[in-house]
Length: 294
Image 1 (cartoon, rainbow, N blue to C red):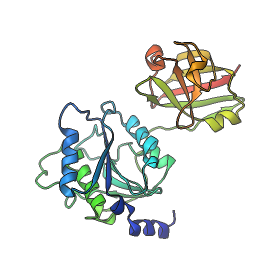
Image 2 (image 1 turned 30 degrees about the vertical axis):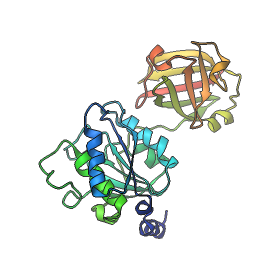
Image 3 (image 1 turned 90 degrees about the vertical axis):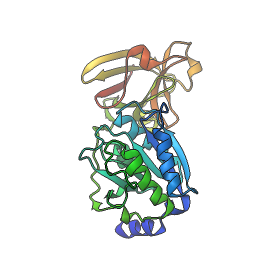
């Protein structure tokens, strides 16, 4: 986006019309942490719409938080504000930021890698450090371990309510957010190598960063038997020939298959089972997967 386009987006401020804050964290629901964030936002403006993406991110798993944002953000209307709190370094010198995306969404978060996927897949057009002098919950200055409540929920709610403009979040920073290690898929002599981005958590399927378009352009077709190899930091974890199927019913119960997931990326599953549990395959930095036609 050009400077003029960014200014026009900020002047239009679609978040003031949306008045919606979506929360994501690794807090779980066993205590009152999630409710406390909602309560802070509600006290800022009782007309705000407060929603949850998930609070079941595995503890301290910045990679998964980053992926869940890119999986979800663009299904919400421009102007929606996301408060993302997976913060192993809470209270340290990591930056607390609000970023404006080219899509018109805002994310309020610690800048510790949670912005990796949206930065690469959507684009950050402006990043600001949250000023804790003006954008921190009253009487919370002695608390250093609950920024989700005291800083992020509070700032996100003030933005959504139109109490502050995006410029009033705090000082302008460059757009170089903290990036996790992310590798684009490669194609070499009919072999595609990519990464394992995430699990379909409830079912244990593994989702890769290989798009169905790249897969098709490389010559893979439904019905093919394809060699699949999975490595973790150069150690082989899994290797087998699997069929490329349109749905799970094309293999017997308990058998593995390659398919295209709901994000139109290549994935691997076990029919009525968990591929991740069965073979000890995880996700994130260091995990690689390759596909080669028989």
